[in-house]
Image (cartoon, rainbow, N blue to C red; front, side):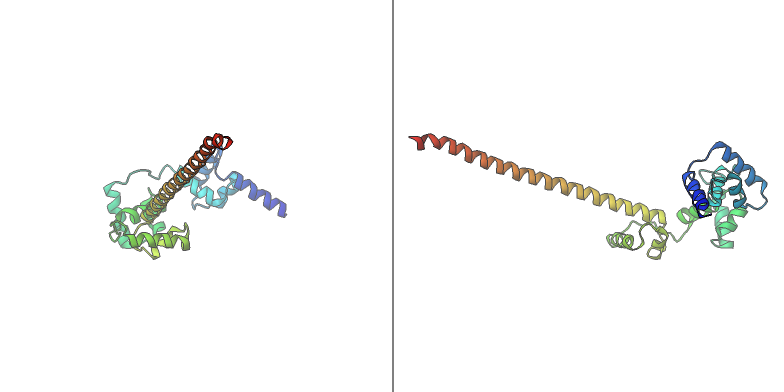
Length: 208
């Protein structure tokens, strides 16, 4: 029994990123026909995908969901719905119908939320981000505890910019160190070479 379970797990992991056209068709048919989106049913039909994978894939394939830029009308509608229902993204998504809960959450939190701080990070805040990374790692949602009015996207972007700057600084320091070592070894070689030349020039005098 355990062998069969592990075999299924391996199969799922192996096929987790690759979707065939046949699987997409089965998923679309299942998603459109199910009154309530019971993704475990779709998973049982496809067999090599989990229910969560089916849910994520269906969101990409669903023709009723819009992709791309948001219109001013959509923004106004979203602001109004948040003022009524709060940040209940699943509920707002059901009312919206043309945007997923993730699209709605990202749009509001990253662009429409009025309390979002748009100022540049200070040196102290840069240090806070670096210290927070040693504690939280890549759990970016936890950074909102320190920066409640800053978007996750802005925090991530700043962190990677800081890391890139550190790498450039380390690389330049390494190049400088490497150059210094080469210069020292070159000067040592010159000294030894000049010493050898002196010995050679003096050797005839000693013979005399």
